[in-house]
Amino acid sequence: MSESYFDEFEAPNRLLLGAGPCTVHPRVLRAMTQPVVGHLDPLFFQIMDEVCEMLRQVFHTENYVTMPISSTGTGAMETACVNVLERGDTAIVCRNGYFGVRLADITQRCGANTIMVDSPWGQPADLNALEDALNANPGTKMVGLVHAETSTGAITPLQDAIDLAHRHGALVVVDAVTSLGSHEVRVDDWDIDVCYSASQKCLGSPPGLAPVTFGQRAMDVIDKRATPVESFYFNLQGVAEYWNETQRVYHHTSPITMTYAMRESLRMMMEEGIEERHARHARVAAGLRAGLAAMGLELTTNPEYQLNPITIVKAPEGVDEGAARARLLNEWNIEVSGGLGEFRNKVWRIGMMGEGARETSVLAVLSALEVILSDAGYEVAYGASVAAAQRSFAMNGSAP
Ligand SMILES: *Cc1c(COP(=O)(O)O)cnc(C)c1O
Image 1 (cartoon, rainbow, N blue to C red):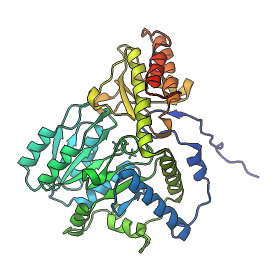
Image 2: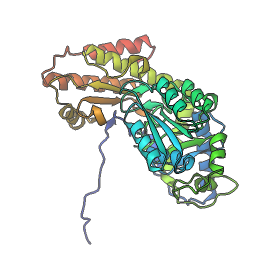
Image 3: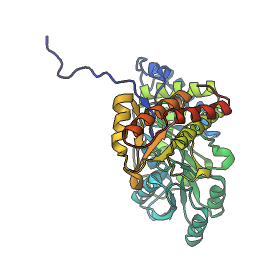
Image 4: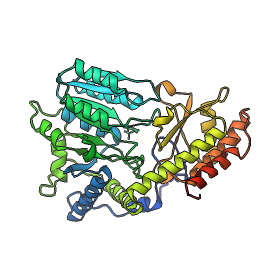
């Protein structure tokens, strides 16, 4: 008998309150322990159809081409851009944080002449600057916008930007990775052409799938391409032939277990109700912000455009951001995220996403932060932040 070289891995039960992945509900984990069936098994086709139907409800769309891409959110970003853009096209990307920067990087890699519309971190996208860019670049093929900038905590209201882009004949690609499942995203009512998300933020699954939806205007542009899509894996028409119930043509092996997980997390969302889920994220975020304010901590986001699933808070002067985060993880089993890009080493990003967005999560992270900040020499009135959060919850009619 030989012994295995490594021990079996037993993952700790962390409370994941960072920028994703979020904590996954046991029901979703249980769904992932189901036997693996084949990707061309008719039973699996039914699972696929159910996932698509629920995704249409979450996106508020009747778009037929609505399905999860086998990748994380970044693969959905590539899917959106590589299908819509051809070399030499013009794309305008609004950059008000790290993911806007990534989106522009991707449009450039697709060979598009990419015009950047920059706004300061913590602010929504600048629509006046977008209008100037559209006026200066007639024939722009695509405008890219990040609805919820996970790196800065800011939400960009979309309707005016979408109307503006359409008046100039451009398609609108919206990153809803962090907003889907926590803020309203209405693809049809707002007339979004391409919208994408990811399983591990507010949808409540582990990382590994990235829902996308393409409207008719975008599909027409793809149909009329002069050149083939420069990706095999993310070629939408190939992927769609597998997801289309009248075709079911093999494109790549579907991640079966991930699809089980997504189906269960969407089922949970339907049980809770989409509106109720948004309200929960708002209630929980209000409590978190009240608690952070009571501790005297400063937020970096314009308060009028504050996201609910993620709150960015500045580490106080003299407190080592990374060391505090390490104590949270090692001693409290709580994960929060550090800053990206220009916020690196300066902020904590506290996520209240999906299953993690609970009143009890707020109380846990606030009480741990009180101890950690106090030990680091920052003056804290013990209990004040927790009390402030509880007052906020009571005012909003929820009890932990
Ligand atoms: C997380 C995130 C992404 C990228 O998703 P991955 O799953 O990490 O590939 C893209 N956009 C936004 C706004 C995100 O928060």
